[in-house]
Length: 295
Figure 1 (cartoon, helix red, strand yellow):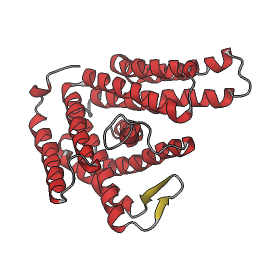
Figure 2: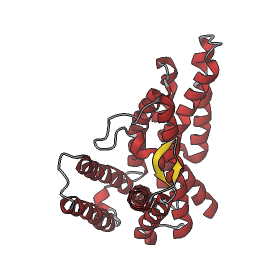
Figure 3: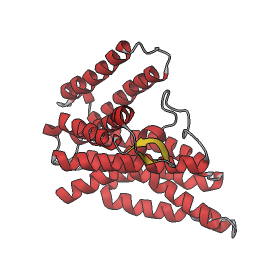
Figure 4: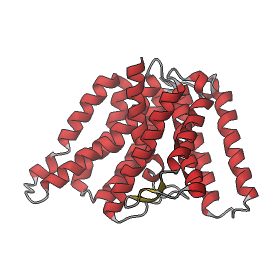
């Protein structure tokens, strides 16, 4: 379940591929004469940190992935609670699920994970019931139960993907890179050719033309690790592209409802953690479903 990332045979490929892309991004910053203290440079530095943490966990095995998923889920729950106005008492179960669900996926697999998630979602309904809150019970129950699913359960699928016979480090690296490049592709194409808004009220910057860049970026990310992925390239790229847009719009809906631009300030250049992993929260479960169907 845990091994040295330095001993993983995928390390040279991962280092060359991701390192090459980061160097290309740095060259782009230099060519554009971007300020080292500006937003684009901050985003590049954040990408470096993300690549190191995510890549190391993927190469180190399911136990390391579970630890990373738990850390990310804890912060995701905190930011989600801020967006929906989750009370402190309603926050206890989602925070516990952030630690318990990745562990359940690691130790018990899919059946234990889904059972634990169902129990956690039911437990999340108790605070409103015990407080006899007739006025706000429906909203509190829905927000707390979704708080279990949105971050903790979604990120726990990374553990299932890491431990799956046809999954492992290759699939995790492909998904991580495809999600990142789909975002970059959508941004670049949208800036250059975007005319028709995709969802003007939820995410004004997103355009329908950007969907082309979204799919192209996802396809490139999957192709770069295609020899190490059991799933066929084109269908997996479509899963990533659809999930990336879906996840982005889902988080945008939560932010717009809360009247906030960012979910937090955890990641320099991006805002909150949810602003960076929103796509992955949908892509990971969809990719696991695709893997289960294909296998």
